[in-house]
Every structure is written in C-alpha cells, then in structure tokens.
Length: 251
Image (tube, rainbow, N blue to C red; front, top):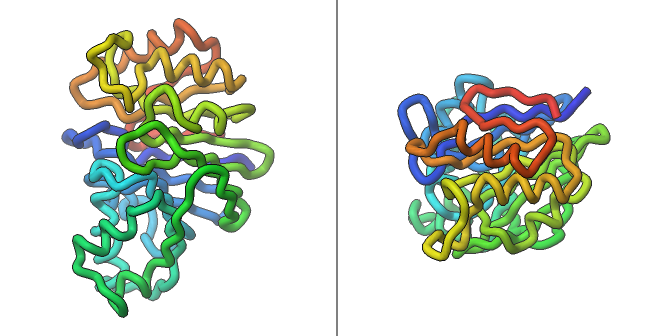
C-alpha cells in the first residue's frame, strides 16, 4: 500500500473555473489528512468523502488561498449532520487566532469544540494514524510551514508557499516525491517576489533532494503549465507533473 495524494485544488493566489485554490488529501490505509483548504476546496472534498472522515487538517499559513474554505469545513461540522469533535489541526503560528477573529470565536465557541488546534514549526513531529508528519518553516512573509508525510516507507513533501530559502529544501532530503509551488513564471530576476519559487528552482530542489518525482503546484491560472514543466525538466531528470484538481498520485 502506498501513500495516496489527491489534488482537490492547485491554483495559486486565486481560483479559476473548475480549479480551486490549494487543497490536497493525503491518505494511507484508512487515515486521511486534509492539507490546506483554499477557495473552493471544501466542495471538492465533499464530492469525494464525508468531511467527518478526515483524521486531521494541516494549514500551512493564513493566506486565504490556503485556508479560506476552512470556514466552510467549520460550518459543515458545526451545523451539519455530523458528530465529530476534537479534530486535530496542525497550523502555522497565528492561523487559529486569525480564524477565530474572523468568526468572533471567543472562549466556549463551537470552533474550539470541533477543532483541536496545534501550532507547528521547524522540526515538529506528529503522528496521525499510520502517517508521520514533520514540518519546516518556509521563506514567506507570514509564518508558513512545509509538511512531510511519511508512511509505508514512502514520503511526500509539500512546499506550501516559499521562496528559495527557508527550511523546505532540507525537509525534502531523501523524499520520494516533492510537491512544490511554482508561482513565478520564467527565470528569477531582481523584480520577482522573493517569497515564491520558479519552476526551475522547484526542479533544482527536487534534484538536490534525490526525489523520484516532482509535482508542480500553486500556478496562477494565467501561467503556462507546459512551460513550467519544461523549465523543471531542464534541471530535474525525474518525472515531472503539474497538479490539476482530480489528479490522484500513488507515492
């Protein structure tokens, strides 16, 4: 049995028709972890499974294209026909506070009955069912964590949002598959935002890690997917794919 990755959404910055923002379902045997819940992701999750079947949530950071639909998940579990309490949420520092502030959730609010929030950062290690998770702090303007999922001798590392620095490259070492953002088109120049990656940089990270495969994600809808894949292949000899909603990968 391998680790399974199902792409619920992969658009960077904003969604597009039939392409929600960042959201991924990582599964091994009967364990299911929802990783990021950007615009439109909850409905895609609900198409595939009852939301009360997930065993944990990972929220990489507080930017809305990665966590906006956590509000939909909250409303479904709080007011829908589900009986789930204490769902673990592993989030970058400050994420829970921002969600609570938006909901006006003070002490005793149902938010804190349904979800059990844990802040994670560099080198935190937790277990969810048979899946082991490790985290690293990335190079992004707000606190952000990359996540590594390991089970059955296989591993997947998800970059979240990051620039070339930070802890993401180290977290990738020896990984089976790297899933990295590729938000910046073409090659980096002095005018590019320092806190995202080009596809070439993503390929270089996968190459240095010794990964078997690279999945590019978080491309804005306006970017050319084939050009991004070609740039990654120019520096990485393993398999390269560009994530699309509905894609299923056996890691």
